[in-house]
Image (cartoon, rainbow, N blue to C red; front, side):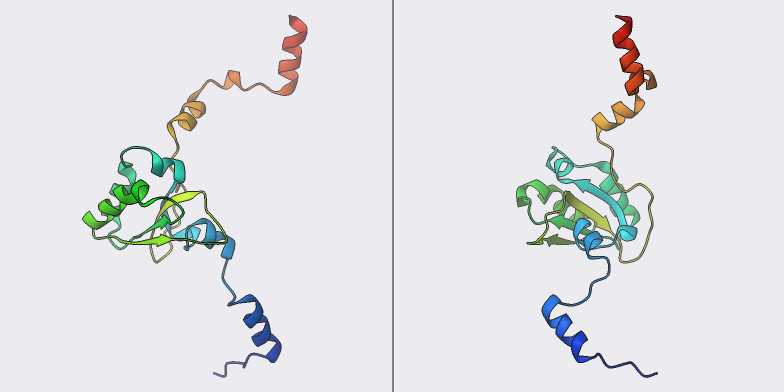
Length: 151
């Protein structure tokens, strides 16, 4: 099987713009991995919270071949609790620092293969409380407008 040789133009473009990447925006967002490989992702604010999330530890037990990616724009003290957890479960970890992009994610636990989990984000308590709230509170514009006229 003959592999076509790259043209001079392709070589120049690669030299100017760098290697072609597969889904670079997705890789920047998920700290260097792809969405379909992610088991769980925590925002920076969730990593800052005291203690650890038991869901992360449970997934480390279920997937001993997983890898932990930590956002290098955060301080070591903030994510060291998760690094200790990774060491306890023999999970490899990587601290990812991208100088061009700072992801809103603080932690990503992922596999080297696709797992395609539908829900990878943990809902925060305030978000869960909003979801469970009565639907009557969510009124449209016209419902609010008629409420003003009744007064």
